[in-house]
Length: 114
Length: 116
Image (cartoon, rainbow over all chains, first blue to last red):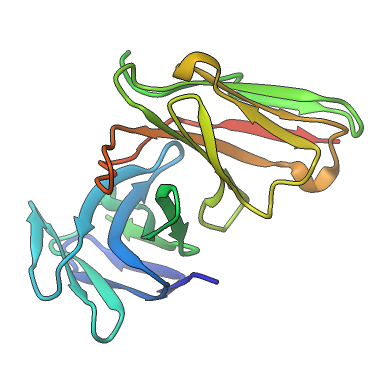
């Protein structure tokens, strides 16, 4: 059974701090790893990673995948209160007729204090 | 609004009643997914449609759950004889995919079910 584990489960920081969120996975037929941000509504897409060692960046957020060690990290630099959210890691597996089936981790709750 | 639309947003029902949720995906998206999310957990996959064909169902989806996507457009998720354990947020997502390419999943804001 596919499994995704995120750590830490929660994190409290002050504005300006840098945070690193971790995601490890066990999945058969790996296709991609995705990060989502979830505030009190729908998860919104951040990154999709398919290749090891290639960093993806979007503003203050960046992410990298290690397919050998089966993990990914999400970095947020110079955190702001608007970064407070649940960050979800998900892995897409492929097999049979199913595409886009995601297995999610339990999420990391990030709280950024002013 | 051209995003994924779900309704109702909130539903409170008594145990044993039937409920139905509707999802309207982004119009050009051929793939549609249902996920369930309980408090403090990540979403769990329930089922997946490509156009009107339901291609996969999770073992989480008991016989009381049924999903349809007539004509490959909107989808409905019905839960019969609801139980308190069904209380959760039901999320719908859609994407445009061809072959192995999945495309980004866009999530709706969810339908929150509370079973008393």
